[in-house]
Image (cartoon, rainbow over all chains, first blue to last red; front, top):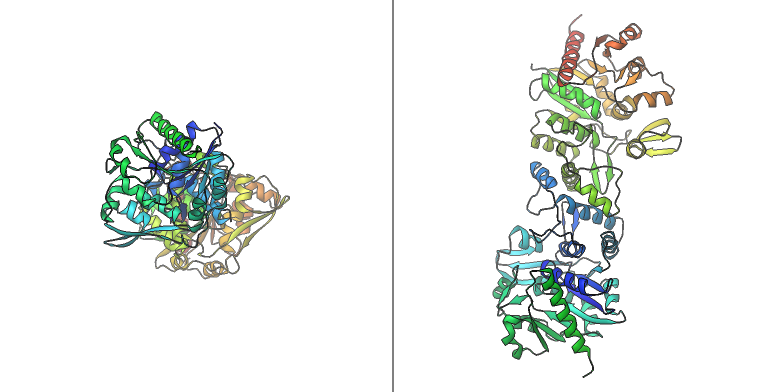
Length: 315
Length: 315
């Protein structure tokens, strides 16, 4: 297939579909734009959780037990850091550290995050383009019942326990979409733009909060399809459902479609939620969206691409 | 014993005697002042090779095979760094990394190197005071036949192969001796100041190049004793003999005594070099200085302390 596809993604859930897309598309045909609102500085290192989860997942070296970090990981650095009285709440494996240290070194030397992640992707043998949403700093903050928390304080240190009142993406209004990522939207032969089944508030909204992304998506030539991260009113993993409840939004795939209203050309619903299709204001594809096996990932990717082809066909 | 001792030391060879001293003195009676001229910034991290070798050696967690770094070390970070195309010439083990990352974080946060190493020593369970010669930046440069090299470029990257013409210690003239280290010289009950069998040019001269150290040692109240790093005209390990030849200095323990002329109250010669005693301008103690076993380290420490007691006794 010579179709080209751009996927917008957060970490774990999004990375599953990104891997499926990578496997069913021709080598080099996929560009994945990652949320960087989760990025933070820790121990002096520039940490980019979603970019790294995508890098490791697409390279086949993700940690299968943890859902984040590296396979065949060791934890001797963390053990010694804790011996020294250092901060242990954010776990950094020995292999994983190489990416953070080398990235930080290169950022300090003046390279862009896009250039660095591009180099890492090549070093990991990827044909897929892995791109940050922006080379500028955007940081997700969560307004909660215990105050405003930096994203990783909310997500890792407090394990999403505080009640969310609102979210904001500091720096997003002034940030530019990364040039490389925008260019991916203008590729000839672009067949689809896919919003992966990531958390809309934590993973996709930081991208959409950047004016350049809003504008670029509004003038798209390829169909934009979102895959619901909710199945039967529950998230496969992570705090999506909890956050929706706390924000007073009905916990339903339909709410996700509504959330992306005005952007979407199509929406992919899980077969469990087939009944919701009638209430959806955009065309819907119903399929199995739960991705347990590699085959599930490939099948969902094929469904999404088939749906995009239908939407793009002259009517 | 309630005697207090200050030792000036570089890395491996000096650390052996420091360990011997720690073992034969009462807990807390030893203060070790480390050369920091070898320190450098690598991958954005503040690396202090001699301080760390001393820390690990005194804590009993030094790598017995390598002579540097940590015991029970793993190398997954380095393997991944090299996969990413990062610099592999300076090896950093996974456990070792914790010290570099946490030190760098605390330096950036404004803590002094003295405070940080003191905290690390306590976290590693040391009673011994481990002190940098200065909290300010001093960097050893080696003028060679292939140009001026930063110390680690000479020592690790080029494995001491270039011919040395001169050495200089950038920043030393303006640097202050660390207050904590100077205070150790003023302790009541100080029984000896020991220059460990370290490389005079690479490990001890950077300390002596700091005016505050020169002045403090000149006004010392306790005897100052150096232990020869040369045995029978050869170094136990490292480039001491090679550098002496290249600098046109006779490769002999006597040259080391001469090098420290004006500072020393006593000099410890290996039994192999007993014949040199007659030519030495300061009192000499002849003993076995080769430290293979732990017992060797303790025996040499006892000899040095006994020698100091003799030198301090009213004559």
